[in-house]
Length: 308
Image 1 (cartoon, rainbow, N blue to C red):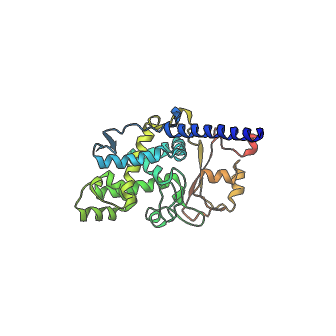
Image 2 (tube, rainbow, N blue to C red; image 1 turned 60 degrees about the horizontal axis):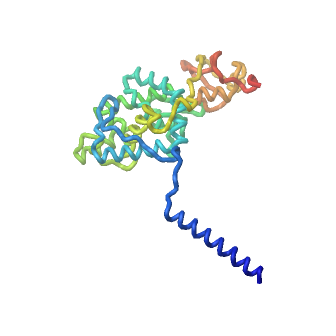
Image 3 (cartoon, rainbow, N blue to C red; image 1 turned 90 degrees about the vertical axis):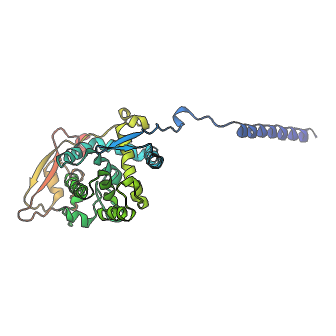
């Protein structure tokens, strides 16, 4: 009998504890730690893009931009990596844009296209600027079994400049030019013609192009003031540009792995600095030449054996 009463007492105590926990769950909201609270700075009333002032007080424009800011600000793994890579690749991209008279803001187009990686899309576009094979050919980028210059950062950036300048000449608006990088010049013109519009913001476009320019604007906001969006770049190891030297090749190389070793590196490092090289040989046709980047003396890219 005593055993039975003890058992009943244990059940009653457990029931009371359960009811108390249930009441706590129903009546009290969980308290988040400060670093768990989701925050977002208020968007400005206007921003600049390629020297053009964009009014952000319009409700539709503001909400569309805020969506892309949220997507990028809270996709931390991707945004942090893009910020890190920007330290390495933006200086060269900025110089090329400036040389060709393309606004500096278009460096953010490369970020949304590829995250500053040699990305390959399901459709077959590749490289920082995501050129399709036929578009690459239009801009004299070489594609072969041995070479894919869509992966050559300098040459593909020049090709992107050529496209953007050509689009700007026809569209006479940098925002529409940016949209055309996704939609095509003809597609943008067609959309505007039947809708009788003159602005990107007034034109109804397919879902991808409708978001495209806003994605560029969102990345610009975050990259220009990363701390406001939760990214303290003083605590992020931003990658530095590789220190390299250029070797001009005017004769074919039958074995690039052996050639790399003769230069004090290896094939892996050769391709890291020259991702446009596809195979283990480089055929140089008459009158042709290639410039290959190699680590400079002060570069920290070395075969692993030197670090042991």
